Image 1 (cartoon, rainbow, N blue to C red):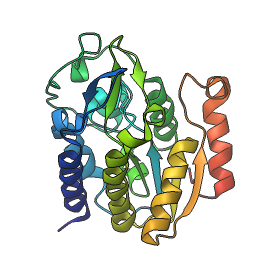
Image 2: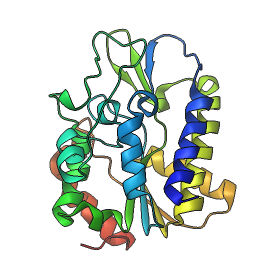
Image 3: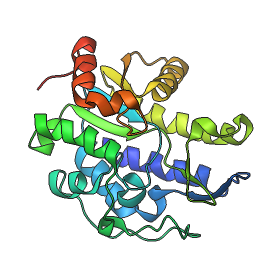
Image 4: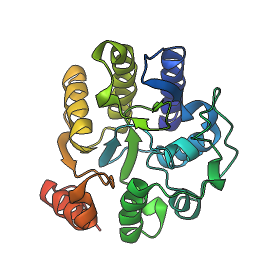
Length: 243
């Protein structure tokens, strides 16, 4: 079985493990784009996770205008559609938050984190295949948690007890990426993701060099000053970036 097919099998196992979990208020809706955006996510994995990688970058979980709409990590629509060449049918989550509709590639809002991350990578590698020949991006968790107001709730804000089955399933999912893609470097996009990579690497005896780059979130003042410049300095210091 190919690496991509192995990872899609791991994706199916993750979806099964997360299905049916319940979360207490203030969480009122939970989306899993690996279910309703499976078609486009499968395109991403099949095209770009079909070989071992020098570097894996790992984010936390989907943003409302990126992966939640496209099924691709940090999936800002122009980056996914125009640079990666991925498009397709995105179904609806059930139930759907009235303030957070899923409209797939018709979404007119921009995922700023994804625009920054993929924008930097695509500027360095105008051909997506050249980037993905050595690099790959994955999210730790596919779930999107939302409050009644539509406000996003990140996994680090959820009760530990509620997160236990999520962590168990997502750790296994990421471990399969480390085992199959055998990266020389595993880089967290943000400190939280880096801590997850440390825990998972230790648990399976994997030995990639670990590090992190600044998260490109617009909620971060540092990211709003000069995210690309800061991230590039971090990548060059880690020794994992070629452009």
